[in-house]
Image (cartoon, rainbow, N blue to C red; front, side, top):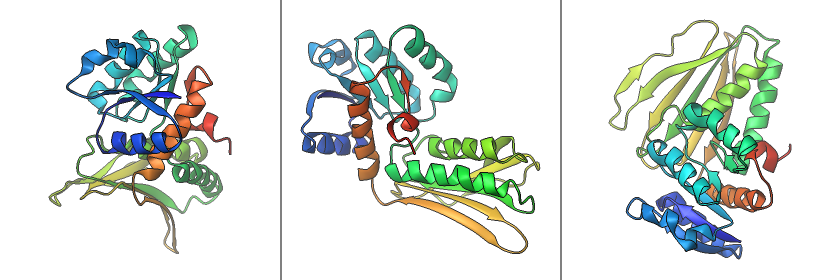
Length: 251
């Protein structure tokens, strides 16, 4: 399979290694200094483009790839909330293909299923208050993380006493803490921590006077995300439409 990479930071380089190890060819690498290469024959020859960049440019990257007839796998977060409906229309009505996920880790896919099942159980125990905390490296621009928002949405779908997530506390790289976890009874607070080079930790806590129930996913490195992105690209090359992890992993 021919793959184009959009974004060549740490994730892009890890994706490149795994793609090559699985026998794929990298035909184009687009980064901040060569965006004109969207128009190149090399980019247009790609079966799929894998996009890991920043929220401010992810949308434009997808549109540029679509204009040049290339399917996209995107792991950029912080932009789909504003442009998700347009992306769905482009895929459903105009023949474009986008595989988007806030997290490509197989472990997170399993964790997400466990999270929804636990929320469904806890719907029967109103004495437990639920909250979430996510920790990521200091270079991550969006907070809370896209994965945390997706996990929160999974809770809201299954826990009737909650219908909205809100920002909790934010711990900056220098240790400064702002915000609060105090919220309305129907709200789910998500706190964010930015520290060092942490790939990603997501913790969901159900707290009562009697005890605590805590589930955590702790990413040790970027390899799991990169492998998931390549698996998604392999899937996307053979499928069309607006795709996600539920299509790739049918648990």
